Length: 342
Image 1 (tube, rainbow, N blue to C red):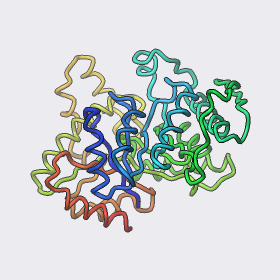
Image 2 (image 1 turned 120 degrees about the vertical axis):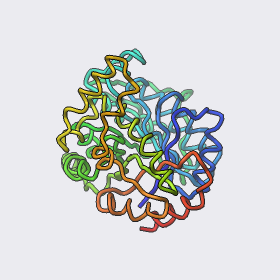
Image 3 (image 1 turned 180 degrees about the vertical axis):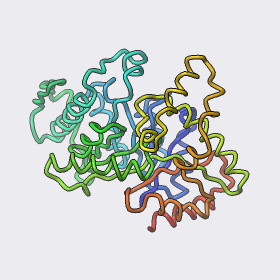
């Protein structure tokens, strides 16, 4: 099983290189770069330049706020810079952020993402000199690429970046099955039941529609973890995860797992508190039952067994965030090595 690390979204850009080096030393397969307060491509460049073996994947960059050509250029450069260690993860975000934070369009997000990925791949084929740029779809038309603006082909030993998708709803999962190289689940929708009943069947539907095998799509579970060395560490992390779950499940798009377990009333209750600006009260609604059901808990030595029990027959890889405290890095390194061997 492949093991990937994440990154604190508030990590200063100047500290990303050191974080990536730590992740590489710990033996992770790769590092996921989310789009929060940093440009994900600049953050990826910092991580790639500081490492030699680590795969770096945007997880995810927001496609709908960028031109396909702009993303094609960025990914091409990062692939060349890193000798092929960069992977492009794309997603849609939700309507309020796209329209009100970025001032972009959110109509038909699934169709736009489909056409966006098709356009990026058309750009890459043109960069490689395989065909003239002449891409036409419902949402994008690209048909101008003169020699002055055409990058050199990638060296023979470097493949074009894989394109991954992230998302939660049925349409996006099925689209990933049709066109993506891999899919990363959202932390709110990473429970084995969601994977078994919704995610994997959706990937299969998409794969069938495109005439390929579902095994061609790598699935990485972006789960949260309650992880530590001692019970005190675990208790502290429990409260951190409780607060995070409360915030995340206030978003309507992330409710599907709550519905699976019969907790549909939780999300509206969380949103009611937010409307009243009672942010500090959100976590009181996330019971121990909800937390223990949705978030795996383990000490470092237990991690390989717990991860195997939860995800072994359902996923190709998992996300395990490295704790900020580096004092237990040797324990974590041993656990990652054991997990990768399974």
